[in-house]
Image (cartoon, rainbow over all chains, first blue to last red; front, side, top):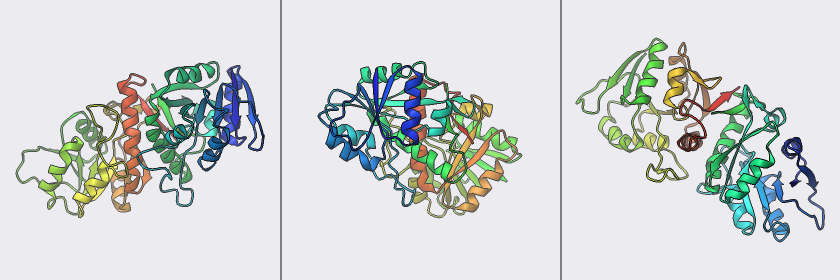
Length: 189
Length: 189
């Protein structure tokens, strides 16, 4: 499967590394490219604030694709709230902006360090994924098979609200040095 | 410290066991008791739906006390939403109903099984606690010192919103048998 990663930050690189470890062909797409060709699975590894413009710019090219949205939409001025409406989520907002794409929420509950190491403390790093298209979730899961990561289905895209709350809480714990940026919530089956 | 636990369900018993292990004197308070005397720390180990009546009944007796609220206020008909407003939490609602008490959110992110065993998989069971009264949080933390549990400060009572989202998500994963009721989100420092 061809995977396109938009964004070369810590998260984009850590995510790309895992898709490569699973044998997928990964390409990075720069913001400035005029007519990019996207793979079947496209990761928006950008801040929440950049998602709207990306969606508007590439809505046509992303039709039919799996779009993986990873943001924790914090108010970074006060670290005390999310900037999305309390009854919605970044992922649901992106799905509305890309009605012809299959939006999945994933990677927001796993720090970059834990995606790189494959471990959250003693736990295998487990990526939660939420989305309304079951086939898209299955493709996502199988596209990471063979990587150091486990993938766990968290339900419909509506669950992105709770995943973003979890990601937010985890970031506040790390910012206050209660946990490290290589630790956090590990998932025990 | 004298700890009063209201509610003798799985959670109430598992919580009581840990306070006892830490050397505290624990008593159970029944719903029907006319004039109960409460300890310095009172655990509402009851469903969310029962909290309002309890608060109204005991508001005077609970003045000045630490009240620990543990509910995950799910809509148990559909397991698809919380019944509290999306910009609030069960804990904040209880604080409003008990303005003279020091309400803490705790124990809602740890299944009863993990409170009994002291383990979430390979992780020590870590109780997140949120609240606006710093002294109350310190008393709560020290009152569990010597038990098998770790306690981690999650911030102000406002963070109960994210803790309840986490507890909700964790319950849906267990109900769908993605995780066991003895597993879930372990905290790795």
